Image (cartoon, rainbow over all chains, first blue to last red; front, side, top):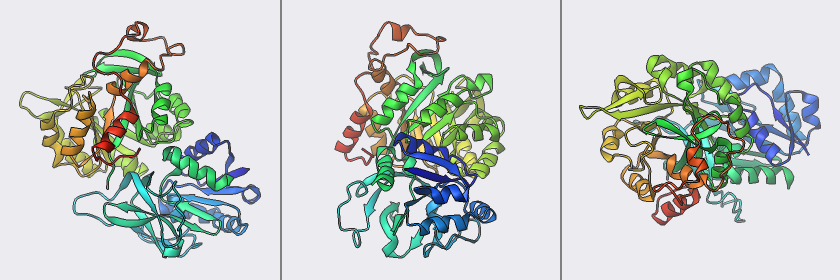
Length: 203
Length: 283
């Protein structure tokens, strides 16, 4: 098992690498298309601003690489910004087009009077019960670590789990064929996060 | 819906965990990495590494320690002490930290907070405030590890720093720090109406009820950072100073002393207690 972590010059890519190392999953950080298409899994990690990252991805033609990899039907994981990039467009700093692999858009979390819009910390997650009947203990009622101000708005069939920002319900992870993506940071969510990571690549 | 974060604040000098009282006097308790790993395994929500001598020497010496720690610990790690430039922040983040907390440099040059939150995002930039009660009964912000008064009222500083873009505030109550006497509620009341970012309180937590009372009376508090109460309870269990950097006061460790006030506490115990008392927290 060898997993590629897409290198798009974002900060702190090494956290996810450390997490894979802890799980004894081989990984490389690269933007080389050949290496990526040869690997058993691809991770689009998530730190940075949407427009900046999309610019870089397009400039380096990484959008084509990502799409080609997803077509191989091998496991593809996006975290945080890496989940948001899969959708059509984002509101972050104006309007930016995303990878458009999935239908939906990225919007700012609703603002309360005084509070700064930032969902930071451990939040409970709940399985989308309309589709996922089986009680997947790992997700249901479990805490994962979030740091974000934007969220994905998409159709219900993509949504795997929900979480809440105060009383606002938002999509916290999605599943579609070989794509799995989380708004929370798996690599910072303690043992639960590592377990999800392990299950996704090693099951 | 917001769970209370239980955070371990680890004060560090040369790779060693040290404990102070009112931010004075350094007593070595063991290796920082061992402590961090132990707390991680007990489901701590976050760890703060504070380099206690960095402000004096003007540089953060924790880089290697952060790098090693980030390999084993998969919860957020915040680093403070001696963060003076965007370059400092980048090197700390690149080593594996998730956030930095800034005090001295922000007091000297408040615009630094704005530059930092623009460059790295507000969620990465936290402000540390060392709060001391002055003669007039006001809370005043100190810096350089509680040594130097800034003349700035804590309330004014909170408002300004929030405007400058910090995403979080850690307030350290120096008067009770290391004493286990509990945080002064009057001090918390003074600031609670001015806070609009997540607030972490530190300095003086000595027992379970101190934590519960804060959780029950101050709903806006997002996290409680604990030092002595956890460290003194833990250090006997992992009494391993063989690899410690030899500099510092080791008497406490060598004599295998019990701290009369802080013992028999653990992260798990805190969380069980909070759950029993209906305070939402991650188990």
